[in-house]
Length: 69
Image (cartoon, rainbow, N blue to C red; front, top):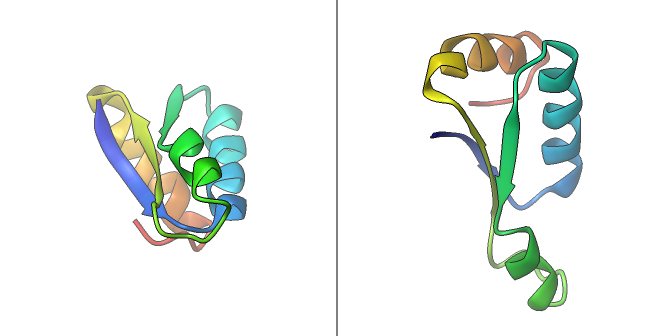
C-alpha cells in the first residue's frame, strides 16, 4: 500500500474516493476515527492509500481533477 494523499479536508477524501472508485481502483482511508475523536479540529489528517500497482493511475486521475498529490 502506498499513501496517495493526506489532508484535513474530508470533502477531498470523499471526492478522491469517488473518482478512484469510478476507475475501479481500490482505496483505503486511514486515521478517520482519529479525526473524529479529536472533535473535528483538524489536528490529525486523514490519509488515502492505494495498492502500489495502482499508484501511477491513481495519481493521474487525481491530478486530472485538480487534487494535489
